[in-house]
Length: 104
Image 1 (cartoon, rainbow, N blue to C red):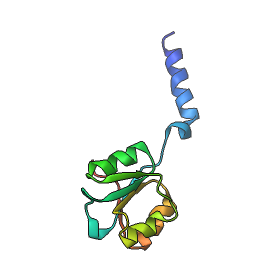
Image 2 (cartoon, rainbow, N blue to C red):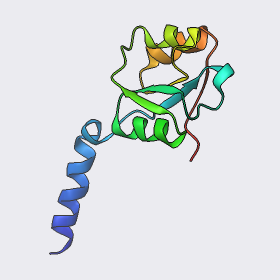
Image 3 (cartoon, rainbow, N blue to C red):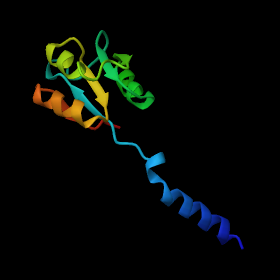
Image 4 (cartoon, rainbow, N blue to C red):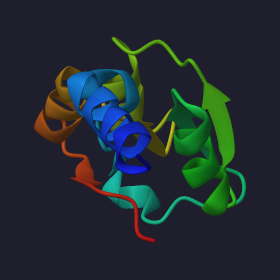
């Protein structure tokens, strides 16, 4: 009788994984500012991403314009981007950024 509620929870969690799953965030850094630190800014788009930015000692800028962020990174206006958006990561890499998962 105990297994019925447990099975229900298992099947319920398997039936909608997209609701709970999120893409892993990537940190893209301007090589000139590797690693970002005090007196630098990092664009971020989630609480977890902003926590990564703050772990560098940098100022986390929430909701920086996603289309301009890779170009601002290349010009040195910001020191990094923490995002899960594949398009932003692709453009940042194409403009010389070093992109990798955050170090734990």
